[in-house]
Amino acid sequence: MASYLEIADDSKGHELDLFCVPKHYEEDLDSVIIPNGLIKDRAERLARDIVRDMGGHHIVALCVLKGGYKFFADLMDYIKTLNQNSDESVPLTVDFIRLKSYSNDESTNCVKVIGGDELSALAGKDIVETGKTMETLLKLLNECRPKMVKVVSLLVKRTPRSSGYRPDYIGFEVPDKFLVGYALDYNEYFRDLSHICILSEKAKEKYKV
Ligand code: IMP
Ligand code: MG
Image 1 (tube, helix red, strand yellow):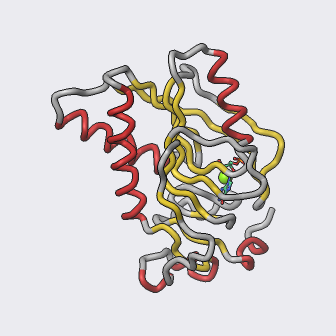
Image 2: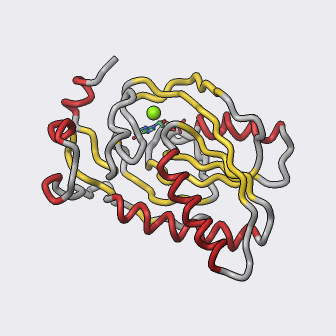
């Protein structure tokens, strides 16, 4: 079982005023739930666990866009740093795929897949809620018969809507709230926010499509 940092359901997060948040989002957020520095510290450790488990095998790292791009970039940087500074190293290539399943704050049943030509190995993702998106992607990846597929997700949401799917590596387990920032969006907004924050109910109305 993957270990993870658990953020409790009653966690109120940190006051916005304690961190730097873009002016245009100040009114839209309840609190900072995972500061950028903590995300990076956790990504650093996940990189170490992944390199250890890969045992020198070539990694094809697949970034699941758009929400996974920040986490993917940081995770790859930490893997690169490990490769540069130790006697053993793993060759690394990257690929990108775009998935879309969300409208407003609800997961839809339809998962759209766009792009990605060499589908195999390590998939890096932003958040798993019901697990539907990842189950769809895994079906697709397995059609390419890769030697091994491992999934790393920065976040897993504790929700009764879960299908039971769990990624191989998990950064944080989070409460059943709508989170934005660090590339996670609400209708494309809030990707330009460094910290992971709790979206306010008012903002869900304001940015509704
Ligand atoms: P699943 O298919 O229900 O597991 O949903 C996963 C996808 O839904 C993620 O890749 C996100 O795009 C989106 N999603 C789920 N929860 C959140 C959230 O709290 N904030 C932002 N996006 C989310
Ligand atoms: Mg999204």
